Length: 248
Figure 1 (cartoon, rainbow, N blue to C red):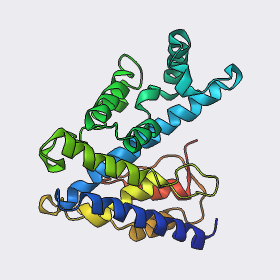
Figure 2: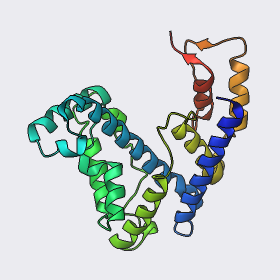
Figure 3: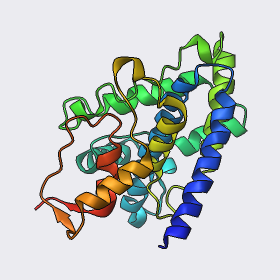
Figure 4: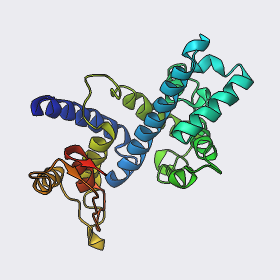
């Protein structure tokens, strides 16, 4: 992919993220936007990982993931297999795509999303992935009065954000940018860059991170290990991941 194409896709992603941030504007401090936007983007990412993998497993059974929920034995086998490979599980009723359908049907409330997040974390209990998921969504406070003073108000706002995020392409063949990484860096840079300055923390702009990554990789295409003792948002590590193969 050319740098021009990549820049165009990043610009489109940033445009959509700005529109999502506008949905939250007026309800909370700008530095808090990322907690909700990134949390929901990541939930969608996890959801699509499960849905796509489960449908692959079900190809020979002539049934899709949503219908498999009707067969308890099949669903349990599917759950065990998905957790073994991905480390977590999301039931069809809690998929991101299911929530979008419920929103469009006027049948969504924020408690559904909270239950979904709880179920994701519960699916990892006793598994090797448990520590990886512990506290993963703790910044996504769905009970916060900043979203609204009633369940209905909170549901309305979160539903609006979910619908906006559903319009971002994640897995199309021509999408070559790092959706999660680029979204994270954009939101940090736009809305949270100054959040830690009083504590002596400063965000490294993406352009600077790219330049440093290229300097480190000059004349190389592989690094055995990478260490950033003051990683903060992880911007430098994300950029190195774009330019190098890490590991033996």
